[in-house]
Image 1 (cartoon, rainbow, N blue to C red):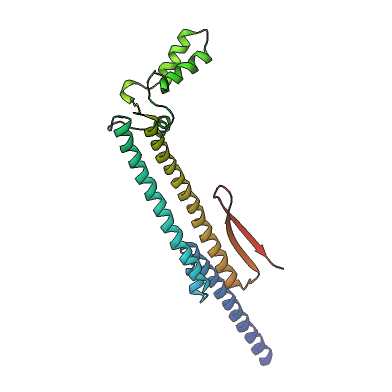
Image 2 (cartoon, rainbow, N blue to C red):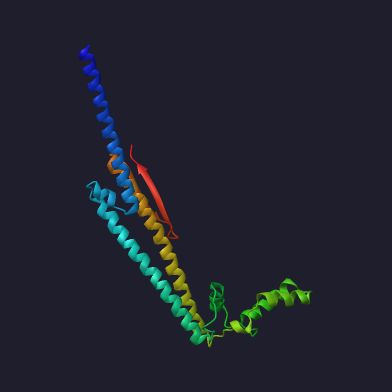
Length: 224
């Protein structure tokens, strides 16, 4: 009777130890994954795995690149504004929209003269309402720029240089967005890598690639 009791007690103790070890491993696994989700590479380094240095270095490089492109975009934004003040004679106190910037890059002026934006609006109004003068007038009033939002480039070369500045802003913005996606992917891959290491899933691999439009694509592979 005593032997049976002792054996049962031993089994219970053994079971509790096993559950504790499994729980500890599960807690560690979640801890490593959480750390890598917050700072890529942290979980791996906590588990004494050197791949963490790769993710950490990637994170620093990506964040530095993102900061660079954002700052360059801001500088080009300011440069294009000052350029328009000098060569297109816009009002520096005017609240300028992206649409206004875009129209300045396409039309020599905002006026009704040849090559002007308002002149184009008149053409559209006549095409849309060929037999309705009132409708034409209303369309022109709704879509044309008033005198207070006037601009006029001194020559085509000035407008061309301005267009290049605006394109640079768009390009840097696109680069910053693509890198933001890469940063997110780096967090995800590092988290999966921490899970792989803590779970001993050596055949699980994750990688990120970019398509033609610089969109990050996450790929998971498992070798059976």
